[in-house]
Length: 496
Picture (cartoon, rainbow, N blue to C red):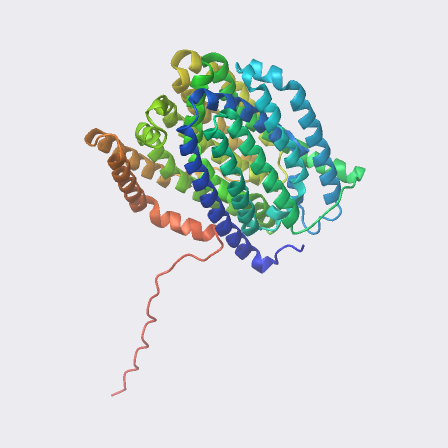
């Protein structure tokens, strides 16, 4: 596969972004509706057990394939020299992690206060092996901006796995329905990625190539592992301190608060590493990062504020009255979602320009500050305290750390701060409108409908034109301009 020509790169990024938007919106809508159905079938404590298994899976996936597949995404020119070695490393590391997961599942589940999760952890660890097998095909799809193919893969995987999950849940299998649905979906997606990859590469091993990609990938894998521990250590604390039922409530709150991250950041991140790398080769990487940050934060600020303002009404309307305790954690958790978006975009940019070590230090400091804060928050205020601890650490530790890492990579920080002032002002206006409406209207559909419309209109009035210009810039299109009539030529006065 040849890289896009220089004049076609912006249009390739734009097409990738458009298909990623369609993909994410479609898949997440289906997942959202499925989650509503399952929440009304399965009890909160079963979701708590599933959360323990999901923690194990996420940690394993973050270290899987040692981060070397990203080297394929950012590698200039042909990848024929390095792809076989990357495939061999990915398969070997995933096999080792899979076997290790089978052995330590019992002690891990017991340490998190849910020994009944042992079998579920072992089942879901199959996804680690599948991820290693499909690592290179998925990297080649990302490298080629082939989001249209990714859309087909994700839709088919969803169509196959969802009936399995709901059918088993209705049959009374509880947490096992969630686990089997996840495994079936991963297996389907991996098989289709192998089938539809734009390039095929066999297994091989070159010691020099292995050293090259590991030097690049290991810091990424370490940073990714730390990040996944960061966003899953709270599940461990809640399960250990508060029990599986409270963990189920917290799991639902966490997923709800993460929707802006899923809907906005994941759309852009499917193409950011490749686009940052290509643009950096042309000297435009920093400007592209700044534009993508403005786009992500501009949209996410609205969604996060609406979630925070109407959390109790949203939780009860979607999942039922028995899930109301989950609403206590949502407002502070949206601050974590915003912080994660900032970190993930910075991570993608620093990876694209080869500055991977700084992200490891950032995540390490974040983890050291977070663990005692989460434990104290759980002891004092339950799941609300855990969420507040997350928000405080993001503001006090994470945001300044990201600024330092970006500045060392040559990205000016002050312009980034100025870029986000307007979305912050719009978010404050939306929050004030939410406080007013919740005092005037009863909790229910009418409040959510009116609040959503008013919030969008208020935010659009303040941020809309700025956000539209940003979206067009990121998609590689010129800004909209008002056409003006050319001035009429003046007639020369006749000499008298």
